[in-house]
Each structure stands twice: as C-alpha cells, then as structure tokens.
Image 1 (cartoon, rainbow, N blue to C red):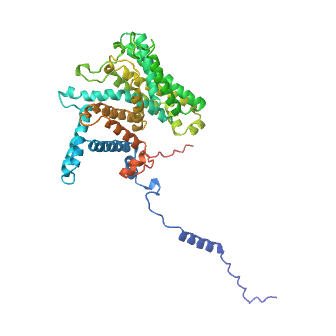
Image 2 (image 1 turned 90 degrees about the horizontal axis):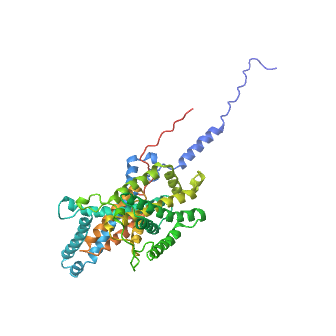
Image 3 (image 1 turned 45 degrees about the vertical axis):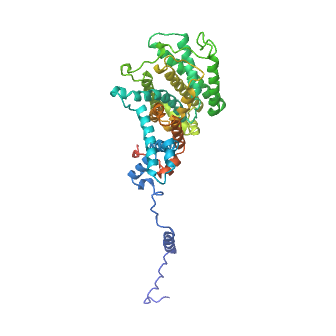
Length: 447
C-alpha cells in the first residue's frame, strides 16, 4: 500500500526526435557544399540580363550587319588587288623603303580612280544636267531588274530548304516560250508584252515543276536534277535555233529574229534618256508579292514550316511533297520571268536569241543575290541593286583595272556570306542569342 504523503515520481521528459537535428545538420552541410552563384553573363538566364545588351548583341551579330561587313571586306580585298596589279604601283614599290610615299600615293590614285569610276558609272555621272547625271543610276536599275527576279526565284526555294541552282535552265526555257509566242503569234498593243511575260512564266514554271515532281515523288535531290536540266535547256535552245521554231528565216547561223517592237517593254522615262523600263516596276510588284506570300499567306506559312523542319511540318499535317512541288513551280516561274525581263527589255531591241544568250551568268548571280539577301524579299531587292551597280559600273572601271575585279568582289562576298563565323571572327562580333525584341505576352487564364 503506497504512502499518500510520498510525492509522485516525475515522469522523465520526452526526448526530442533527432530527425530535426539531423535535418538541420544535413541542410547546413548541403549549403556548405553548394558554391556561390557565378555572375557570368554567358550563363545567366536571359531574364536577368539587360534587354538593351541582348538587343545590341542581336543587332551587331545579326545577319544584316554581317552582310554589310561582307561587302566592306570584299571592297577592301578588291582594293588590294587593284593596287597590287597596277603597273604604277609596281614601279613605285621597287624603291618603297627609300620613298614609301610614292607607292602609297600611286596605290591611292588607282584605287580611288577605280572605285570613283564604279560610282560614276553606276550611281551619279560627272557631266551634263541632273537628268543626264542620273543615267548611270538607270543603268543600275536595268541591270538589277533581272537579277532581282532571278534572286527571288532562288531565295524562295531556299526558304523551303531546296537548293535551286537550276535558274539558268528555267531562264532559258522561259525565253524559249516567250520567243515562240512573240515570233509565231504576233500581237499588237500592250497585250503583246503581257502574253510574252505569261509565256515565260509558264515555261519556267514547267521546267521548275519537273524538279519539284522528281523531289516529291522519287526523292531525287534538286541539286543533281537542276544541274542536269540546265544542260538539257542549253542544248534544247541550240537545237531550236537551228530549226524553223526559232531560227530566223534565211539565216544560216543559229540565231532567232529580233524581238518584235510590240513585245518590247517600254522605257519609263524616254524623254530623259534613262534606261529603266517597265520591267523594274514589275519586279517591285513581284517582290512585294513574294513578301506577302511568305509572311501573310497560308501557303507561305507552310513553306517556312517545311524549310525549318520538314519532319515537324509533316507531323503537323502539312503535305511536304506538295510543298516541294508548289515552291518549284513558283520558283521556276520567277526565273522564267527574269529571262523575259532581260530578253524583252528595250536595251535588247534588235537582238534575239543565240547560243551565247547570257543566262549562265544571270542564273549563277541569282544564287549570290539570294545568299546576300538572306533569302528575304527585301534583302534580295537590295542585293540585286548592289550587284546591278557593280555590273553597271564595271564598264567604267576598265579605264583603271580589268572589269574582272568585279567578279572577284562578288566571289569574296559569297565566301563571307556563306561563312558568318568567319566575319564574326574578323570583327570580334558576338554570336546572336536568339533574343526577341517583343516582350513576351502574359498568359491569360480563363475559366
């Protein structure tokens, strides 16, 4: 029996679980092991960086700046070639270490003279009134007309991921179609030009459509098929020039009759003596149309989707095979248009088709224009104007240096455009981060 006066024994205090203590120790240990955040702008999240910095990096390292720098480097390299191969510079360089100023002065004289002639022959003349001084600019616009149309043909195929180097053959087929219509179906009035243009577009589209069908149905690569079709088109032209289809009556040589005056595009400013014709206006409208097609139409969205990722586009329900066919039809039609704009221009009045028709240079220059323009309609327009200026001014450059220096400049532009990392290395440009200038839209949750 227990004693009531004896106090009750105290219960021992409950021990706190060791889990909290171990967790705290573990948290401390983990904290000690985690290094402090590194404030490196390269690995920081985009949201933490300055939007201005990202925007400047995107602009400086973007394609537009690279294109400008590529042209600048090409002009510098061209200047070096002009100075090195000039006889006066070579003569002055023999005593360079005794009088270096003579060599530098001779180099500056020939370089400034050559590029000055290029400017005066393509942009602004040196004699006459204002209208006469702008005649070289009209030469540039004329030379750029066909280049822009052909460049759009190649650029449009580029946007879908197809390398259309068959613009030469498509141009030839286009002029064959337009020539047959002009020679055998004479039409009077403005309708003659319209019919000739439509015939050229149809011819080029059919020739380009062959490439599209082969790519879509058999998987044949467009580079191989376009190269082969180029040779087929050239030899087809030579054959037709020896037959009554294109050969001029009473002519022994393979040459067609001149383009009829009714099928020749009129000058826009005949009273001023400018050589720009209706074709330049057509090219401006076509450039706007290609821009609308790529950026505002459903078909253009399909073109861009297939160009970015054909597999993803196929999963999204886009018929990739039909896209290949459609783009080659349109691309071939644009190339055919380029041939018509050149052959039916008023500067070619009195000339017809011959085996030496300058489709090879126009076809391959179109690739350069498309590359320099980054396959964008506006870029192709500006690139075509640049190359038109180089071609127009090369004739005046022959007073100082061979006009082949223009080909050197164009080749260097292609080299640098095809290798953007090389331009970034030369000028220490940053690599674009893919930053978008528009602020991201906030998600709206609806019940």
